[in-house]
Image (cartoon, rainbow, N blue to C red; front, side):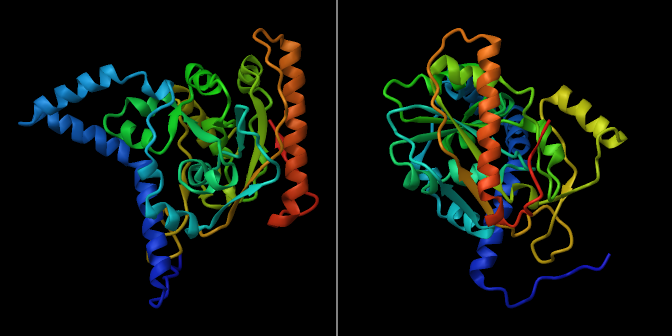
Length: 334
């Protein structure tokens, strides 16, 4: 394989952008493991008492990720996130007003490999805050991450909360509105489909978010992130292949998927784990009004789910030509 190296005279700003993305990759892939290892060292070393104190804190603070988390405006406004967003770059597109007197459930599509668009738009300021004043976004992620010592504090500071039913219910129960739950509907399973050009969404059997929206009367908002699947290449894993079977079994056991992805490096463009510089346009659709129904029937859930799919497809069709998707390409629902 011929290695393509980056030119020597790359502007300093682009270098800083690359470093910003590199630290994000480290945080996403290795920081949790690093924090757990550090905690073990505390227990085994001379500072074991600090580990004991933290365990006490963990016990007292265990439910925080399910009751709105503990965001930090300071962390969300770090300058590094500005350079992170500029690297791709990441854009948030508004198509309709979202009245802050309501609560909303935003369905984010597609998952991609590392959900860069969701993080850049909903966990850093000021993109969402500027476009939708009065609304506070909460990005729901797998509960397992909030069991990692120290790492949990970091991700909560960015506005991430648990994806448990209790957590979503808490966010959507805010009296007076102003809260927006952001849920990556396809989940970890969908990341295995995150190949460049893929338009396959895992959504046909995912109706829990519909039921939650009905129970709380939260308006549904489809969100499609154009370019999300273009950031990495994956080792070929078609359904039925031995690799895909192994990945799906591991996903069921561990709760998260392990896509074998690659892209570019820091000083060369041929291999590495840093995403490609591909623009991400996250388009926020129009809200679907939802009337509160504490005990929705299966038929009512199915009806609203069908309407959501219809609105999501319409959102995609109306904007795909703006972002280089051929007219004959359409979303595939699985």
